[in-house]
Amino acid sequence: MATTKLKTDRPTYTSDFIPSDVERAVFLGNPVLDNMMSSLIALGAEVWSNRRRMKVLESLLAEKGITEEMVESYMPTSEQEAEWQKDRDRFIDLTYSPLLREGDLPVSADFGDRKKR
Amino acid sequence: MIDRRSIFTATAAIGTFLASAFGSRKAKAGMQEKYPNHTYKNGTPTGDVEPRGAIGRMERLPTLRIEGVHDFTCGMRTFLNKHTRKLVTRADKLISESGRDPRKEIHAIEAMKILDKDTLLGTSGRLWISNQQVTWKILQDHYHENADEYLAEMEAADNDGPGTLELNPEMEIPDYTKHEIHIQPGGYVGDAFAGPIYHYGTLSFYNGVMGDNTQDQIHVSTANRLPLPEDGVVKRILVQGCGLGQMTVALAERFPEAEVWGIDVGGPLVRYGHMRARELGVPVNFAQRLAEDTKFPDDHFDIVTSYIINHELPQDKNRAVIKEAYRVTRPGGYYYPVDFLTGGGKGKPYSNYRRWWDHRWNNEVWSYEYHTFNFDQEIEMAGFKLNPNTPAALPRFGKRHAVKEA
Image 1: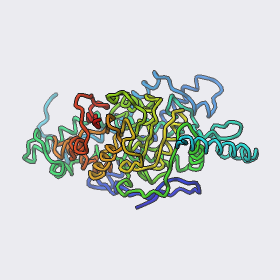
Image 2: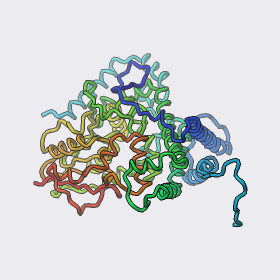
Image 3: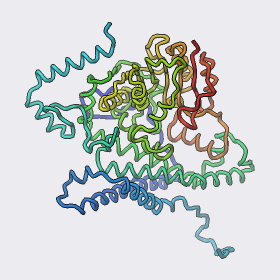
Image 4: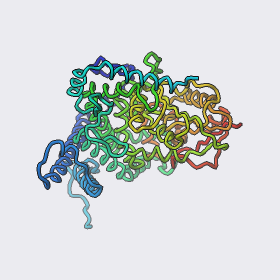
């Protein structure tokens, strides 16, 4: 059993809980590889978040008198949202498609029987 | 006779009066400084923290960074779903190489042994789980970093209406409910912010699997598809295991004259649910209680329902929940548990592997038991009569219009 540690005197109406063992999971035979994947996901999340923020800033730069509050409260149009989602998908495709590459040739592999396409 | 709602309303009114009579201006000013994100009325927090406003019934994620990360995790789910065919092909190839026929059903444990070490399936699983972890972490970090402000927000709503909230801090929480389902940190009972974390976190699930749910579209359409009792009378509705109350609120909106209750073991969930329903102006009664021990009288409700809780329960608890539903449903009323179809432990290699994987690594601790459970038969054994002609309240899920005969 475990408890989440919150520094507060306020009532939280929580109880202890049974943590999962997901932090111990190794799906790729080597925890280093798993950890790299986790870092890649986190990196991607941060990069995308920044790119998305930039889009907000770029939209606001078209106007005058930009404030932080304006940036935070910017409401994308449905067209912008659709366009941004497309860009998001392009970004994810670029960054993560290589991880699903099905490579099978060792360093020592010769040219083998290549065929024209 | 004074009912619960009257008592809560009276308590809330007295609390408000005392606060306005004795709260000093200095204290109010200090409060405003301490909790700048609250909305205020005459210097008193109204109990609503929404730093970036709301779109319809969904408060926007609290910072632009979190919104961006959330958007990414939604996109990553979509990306992984898009590559499912590739994973199915790989699984079939490996099953075939092992001497089995991939077109035939295979038990999940057998499939797991064959597919366990494959790098493509492993990579897909790792990306999925790491994405899920980011989904939760970004939210939990924010709520914990700003805990005092958000706890103050909930406190301001606890005794206010519309609707009521019953919390039972002395209640014994059963161990089976204490798991970190979906690897959500703290699960449903162990984190004070289980409500908003679940609420925002599951948007990516809906986005990747069923569609946009930012306006509770899935819950609203499910609530609207539930049938009427044969006599058309709907005075009282119960939602067992209501979570943060999206279905409960949707039912209260569909049946504005009915007394609607949502109960859940998770104190933080019903607390958030009450706060949210209050902000939406929908009168719902939330209580921290067990689905298998609702404390309501016999034959009390016209409709007893639930939304995707049964697969989070062990089989014996599912039987107890169904039995309790039968007890509190009135003759002529019905029970409709909305949840996945159950189908035994066998299936095509990839789907069966993925089901087991989800159970094991997404920490769906009880889902495998659920899938091997003859849920419809158990409902009928409890005394209900299933009406096979009623369409599924949630498409592709179970058709479970279980009538308690008059």
